[in-house]
Length: 572
Image 1 (cartoon, one colour):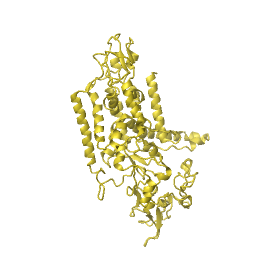
Image 2: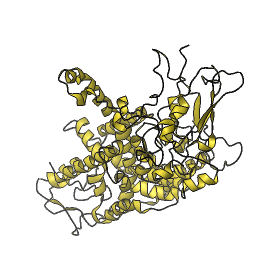
Image 3: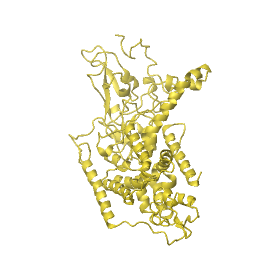
């Protein structure tokens, strides 16, 4: 195994381990988003669109500053997207298959993609997610591979379950591996199938022709200090030309290289039959400084930037955009909730790079990538779907792993004031309001005591009502509502509190909010002062599948229902 491949595999393993640490409490890691901070296009695009700079981008700055000295070593050694493509290239491409010769001018496509992204960023619209290699590969492994592996592991446990029961292997008998489910999985899978299959056209097709991060590093690697050198011993056999994965070596003169395309893989050095190739910092007359960017290409890059600028303009003037629509009558998604701690929407979209780490980190699978309900620029951004799961008021995972601070990392006592929205009751669906059936599920699971039951004229059972100043929009009520399909109680963005800076608690109190966790005596949900604060509402440590998480049984004080009867309902 070559030194380069060893480094590649090691970096990929570290990347996957960091992603696993996001999805698991067993593998804690202090900086699980480190690789995202290495990505040059995430750094430049987010700084421009978000109008802010943070020292968390220092790794990306280091990568860019190393390019004039060592060329595109990030692409050749560190990038997990490049490593994944290299490995799939080995699997898909037939040994000895002749590479299709591609017009070298197609290399300019990656610059067009880069300037398109930067053009949109000038208006505060982040399209980084379209081309960022680290964001894309994190989305692939996190939203596609992770659920598949979880499903297969769960299936494996079921297969060996009879054998485990026979031999009393209780660690397997009682094991349960949850399978997260994400929207947009099929689209992401098809996209990456196309990326991997492109090797049939050219090795590292994505890296050579499309990657905007590669374009940034290429601009800084026109004449690196450490570069390919060819001695006079070269016989022009052409082996290096055929083996170069990025076609950085001139076909007409194998002694000449396009340093901006070279990823310092040293394949040419390894296969040279006369040892005429080496990488060093010495000067050599046969190596050109790189291919200069001519005037026609400059004009095309300018047009590409203007296209990005125009796309951003159209998006900002679209019906679903929140830009410039403050006040009464604005058209905005009525059901789009953002993760608690999210900064205001326009700033959120400017900083979110759609890496999917917040979704992978969510223990209840509440966060899902959205499509176009908030406009084109919001595609793949995280939405909070209460019907899919509930948001634990003590959980801060999404903010802790967000690499660009689109979701703020908050202390737990501050976190409960970061209201996502407010619950509202749809009376014509509610079993108590409409069907006059006893049901108190929403009150039993609400961790904030925001639901009260009162009697109204003409109804023999008490009905639920929302105390809005106590509601934090956690979604427990909507998730647990026994009404099928559409819940009778839903959380809407109304009253959501989103701030880029400052204290959520102080601002919430100014707005008249009165949010606090109910005491354990009230519902079994531990209060803020309780040492077990952080568990889900009303659950016991010995409650079925969630025992290891420290949850209570929400119906521990409710009479055992008859067969087929929903908890809290009359037998009739």
